[in-house]
Amino acid sequence: MFESISTQAHKLIKLASRKNKTINNINSKTKLLTITSGKGGVGKSTFSANIAYTLSQKGYKVAVLDADIGLANMQVLLDLKPLYTFYDYLDGKVNLDKVLLSTKYKNITLIAGKSGFQTEKVQNSFIFSQIINEIINLNTYDFLIIDTGAGLNEYVKEFLTLSPNILAVTTTDPSALTDVYALMKMLSKDKTKLMLCYNHTQNYKIGETITNSLVNLAKKNRLNNNFMVEYIGNVSTSKCIPTTARLRKLFACEFRNEQVCVELDRIIDALLNNIK
Ligand SMILES: Nc1ncnc2c1ncn2[C@@H]1O[C@H](COP(=O)(O)OP(=O)(O)OP(=O)(O)O)[C@@H](O)[C@H]1O
Ligand SMILES: [Mg+2]
Image (cartoon, rainbow, N blue to C red; front, side, top):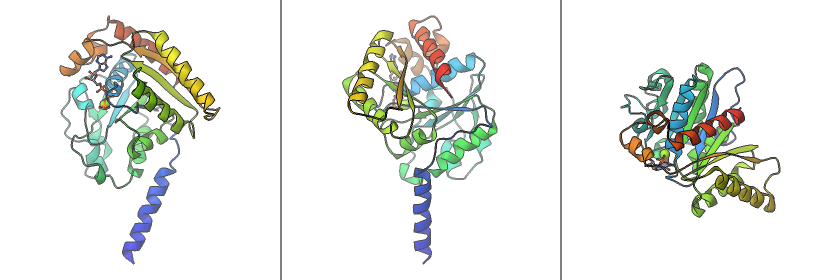
C-alpha cells in the first residue's frame, strides 16, 4: 500500500517537473541564462566562465551554476576548491547559502558541481527548479548562468525548460551543427528564441552565413514560425584559451587585447540586447 502511494507520488513529481514552465520571476532582477550545445567539447564552460567574467567587469553580479551533472569544470576555470557543492544542496545536507561560493573574481559566485557524482542519485529533476528559484528569489544577482553538460539528456532538457534565455555554443563542424539543429527542433516546440554563437570560427560572417542556412532549413522543415534564432557572434581559435584554462585563469581577464576578447565583447553586447 505504502509502496504504491510512494510510487504514485514519485510519478506525479516527475510529471510536475516535466511540465515545469519557464521561470519568469518579475519580482527579481536576476536574469537566467542557460548555456548549452548538444555536442561536447565545443566551449560551453569556457564561454560560461568568460562571459561571467566580462559581465562582472561591467559591474554586474553574476552567479554561475555548474550543471554538468557528474562532472565539474567550473571550479577549475574559476580556480576554487569547493567546500560544498550543488549536490550537498540536492542531498539536503546544506542550505543554499553554503553552496554560494565566493570566487577570487569580484562579483562572481559559483555553485560548484562534483566530479564522479552518480546521476541516478538525482531521483527527479524537480529539485533543479527549486535551487534556481531560490537563487532568483534572493534578488542578489543580475545574472544566473547555467553551464550544462553535453548532449540533450533529461537534466539538460530540464535546465532548458526552466530557462527563458538559452545560448547555444557550436563550432562549424558538421556534427556540432547537426546537434544544434536537433536542439532548435526541440526548443521550437515551446520556446520563442535561441541565441547562437560559434566557437573556433575565424570570422563573424561565417557564423552569420551558417545561421542563415540553419534558419532556412528550419523553414523548409516547417519548424514553428514563432521560433527565432538570433546569431550573436563568433570566437576564433586561440592558444591563449587552453593555456589560461590550464593555469586556472580566464582568457577574458588575462588577454584583454587579444582578438578573442574583442569577439567575446561583441557577443556580450548582443547578449545584453537579447536577454530578458
Ligand atoms: N576558441 C578556442 N580556442 C582554443 N581552445 C579552445 C577554444 N574554446 C575552447 N577551447 C578549449 O577547448 C576545450 C573544451 O572547452 P570547454 O571545456 O569549454 O568545452 P565544453 O563544451 O564545456 O565541454 P563539455 O561538453 O565536456 O562540457 C578546453 O580545453 C578549452 O580550453
Ligand atoms: Mg563543459
